[in-house]
Length: 75
Length: 161
Image 1: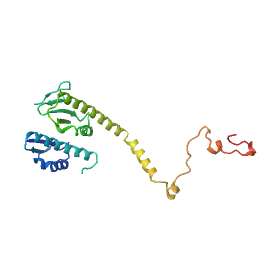
Image 2: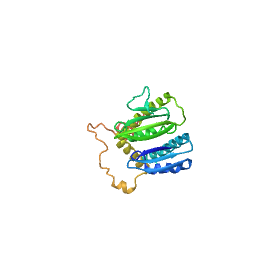
Image 3: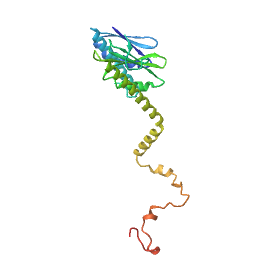
Image 4: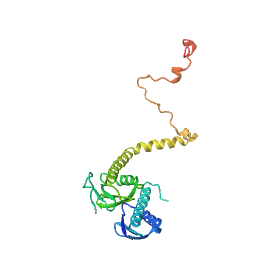
């Protein structure tokens, strides 16, 4: 199990949600929130899969966030 | 466990060899967030990228290998490339900001030109009384005066003979 803290001033919440929706079918993803961050708990069959799923999820959320900041929108 | 990475600034860079990752603390007063986004975007195809808050005005960039194990040399290479890319993105952002007025003026002129010739109403409102340019020494000469056919009664010569 691995927990990712997406800082609210660095990531766009809608894009973190979008990434969770895309990668949800590859493992167990749980969303939570505190004052400063959205927290996604990632779990998959093995540690290696968990690590990869967390990494791909983080890349996707960051990519969408950057696209939104550039005004390219997200689709 | 994170530890310093040889030949990198220890105050900013830590490596976690077990996890195959390297982290880099970036000061936002030096590299704006847009530069951090721009620089990290170029790493998305090579490694897993994660941004975290380190402290007030500081962002921790974590680059993790997609495939393990990974050599220290490659981690060091990522750190160097990230630093270069950060500087390039910050500099590009500053140039863009400084030249924003010029870029907007050129763009608006280009768009204005593409809109086609002015209408009769616009021409009617145009002020033609204004002198085209100042000529305090009186040396300016019109195209007709310089190259046009001269009157035969004033000398009989024509241009080009």
